[in-house]
Amino acid sequence: MGVFRLSLLAVASLAVSCAGAHAGCRTVVGSADMVTTDLAKFMANAALKNAIAAHGLKPSGEIKLTCREDTFTTYCKASRPACG
Image 1: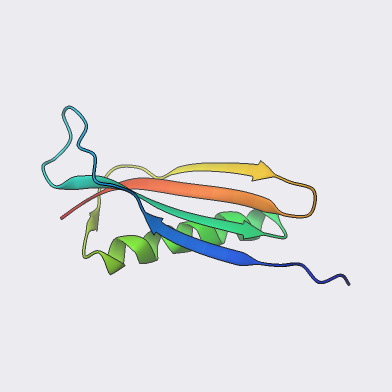
Image 2 (image 1 turned 180 degrees about the horizontal axis):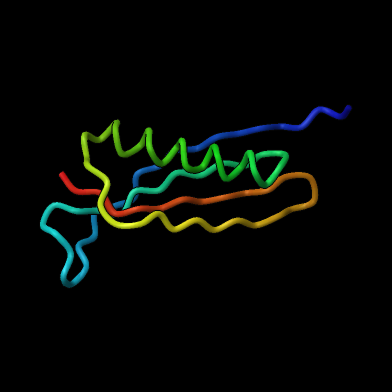
């Protein structure tokens, strides 16, 4: 079995209020670069959940998940509105 570099990145994006959004809301992002698609999806969602909790926000709205398959890994990004 080859050795793959696995990484996990949880990032909170800048607060940007959209028209019609609740006051104090922002879009929070969690991402993961993993060996399998299922693992990348799971870890991106976990990173998103941790980023929301770390900033003391409450989730609002639905999770948007996008994935991109590379040669040896899959990168997934999960984003969701969250409010303070």
